[in-house]
Image 1 (tube, rainbow, N blue to C red):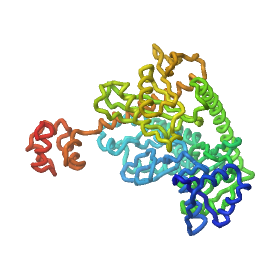
Image 2: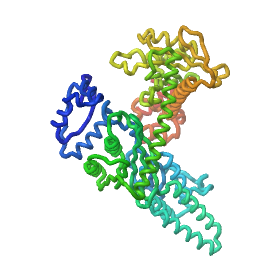
Image 3: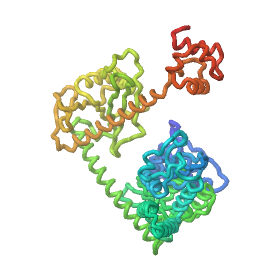
Image 4: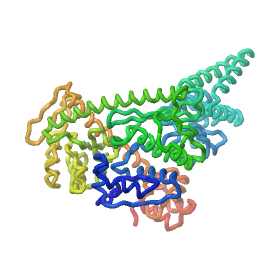
Length: 587
């Protein structure tokens, strides 16, 4: 369903499309949400698939692509990390991997919590002494690194271990992650005892340390129930219009972490519908395990199993256990979901109260739905950037964050006012009526009277003078709690140090500062990788690499003669003269 502006409002599937469309014609029988949806629909588009399972997959894909206003939305869609054992080296490396599986090797995961994979990699290094360095570092080592000294690597880079013995460690690590943890541990215990009987206590101590590390891994990833195996446990808790979904992931007997979602636009859907939509969308980008344990009965479960099987190439069972160990595992996930929902509601209740106080403090007509905060970052005027963060009733709206590279070349080094003027001008000069939903209710600027004067001028020039704006300046000693607020037409004022609204505004200001510094550091870091050779016409990546490999640095190239430059493979006489002329100011 599409509105007048061509925006997709809703995506749905139906076995009988005529019956489905006819159900929308009886407005009296529809709830308020559906009535609004029909009122805004200007046209409908139809796609026919070969099967209902394919229709379910297409529905999930289109919802993720268009984020329709009237569908349940799973907003957090980033990929989850894996543990990767590289497969293109004689001594495989263990590392965390995120993204497409394009590298050769063996993958274990996905881990739904990034912290879980980081901790597991560290503990696996201690238990199996596997290298974590890159191939380039490995190739250039001439002596063992610190990891060898602290017993977290077997130093294959300097031949402290043979390829065969190292491969044995790799095989043990992979078997351990595949669910054979107890067998590996028992084998090491036997080996330690044999070494002790031979009075080789030094080696026995090393084995003991590895066993301790394995025990920590087992504790970190304790199995919820012996009968679960490879499975995801999905539980839903609900409080009126807000719902929480908790997912626990188990692979090969290990807990690969848990994660929480708060799907948007769930108010008029049943628990079963929310779970069905979550599963359909989530497993579009993640591999589904053989079994999904769910907290509620799901309609069309067989159809969903068929659809997921098309993507996974193996049978998938969606199970709603009612007794036994599997039910206990689901109940545990339910308790986590309820606790997460309680925390979510508590945080948002505090946030709503803070926004109400912001409304009173700045004299707004209603509680602000969009607050924009601006800050600049630079070092002595270099790599100058501006940053905008956005906050609303649901917290920080990170997809709406924006960064501004300062483009004007006539800005005096370190002129914060000029930088702010450029940022605000670029933001507000094209704020058209069609984009009023993106217009802020309140603009906050990190600064004092001078920055507020700049904002006054820019907002007047761009026709956005009706927007409320203010400056937040740090106190004399730049101490938190002594901030001064500057509002046009009013005297500067301070808020009590224990004021909840002050703490909320501080969080906004600090988030803008954090984001601005991050953008600045990224820009500065990228500039460090730019070579002066990039400014020379006809010098592409191949020639640039050849020149740097031959001379070692751009400075050495600048000091070379035309004859020396011409000796580099792929560099002709005319190109050598061009390079020489660039460094010596010759045409």
